[in-house]
Length: 207
Ligand SMILES: C[S@@+](CC[C@H](N)C(=O)[O-])C[C@H]1O[C@@H](n2cnc3c(N)ncnc32)[C@H](O)[C@@H]1O
Image (tube, rainbow, N blue to C red):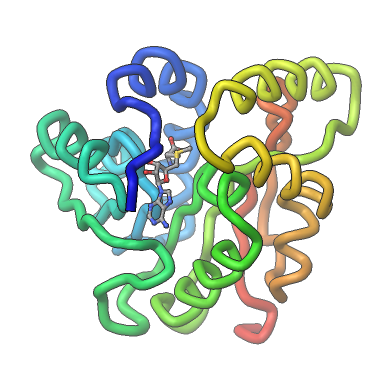
């Protein structure tokens, strides 16, 4: 399959600085909720794994893009990475206490999002948690401004990325996705400038 992901260098210089605070927060949450070992699905440049590794937790990054992972491996040699599809992860069931899906859903077709969630359920140990970061529909003035900024970023994406991200929002964004998949929100943070939310979740059936 053709690799339509952004160049890792462009991602590193243009997008990562905007996400640094969020990635540090996610690393703190991995410690707070004791989610090690944790899997970062669709890990991109591997920066999230770097912060989690620095905090002394066990992390594995996974991405389909060989180009992204070559970059990630060079930049973060201490972090293990797997090159695979997030909907078909070559790991045993129940081995992870946590899974991170950061800006990994909106760009994909609905069917693939659903398959990835099914795979998360298989990979998580009982009581395990998924940390999501992704787009919401604007809820106040600042998030409307954030929505405009993210719309401009999304507009530059290649392939079906933009179309899928619009569909994700039309379907109600991250809030609706979480509800639809039987997940319970343990803790959430609004990220108005990114018109996004960070949410720690658990499958309702695990309670
Ligand atoms: C928008 S980037 C997000 C990167 C990172 N999670 C972050 O928050 O910065 C999406 C990543 O998903 C990867 N990707 C897309 N489809 C995938 C799939 N089916 N399986 C695994 N990775 C995939 C892309 O290669 C890209 O690196």
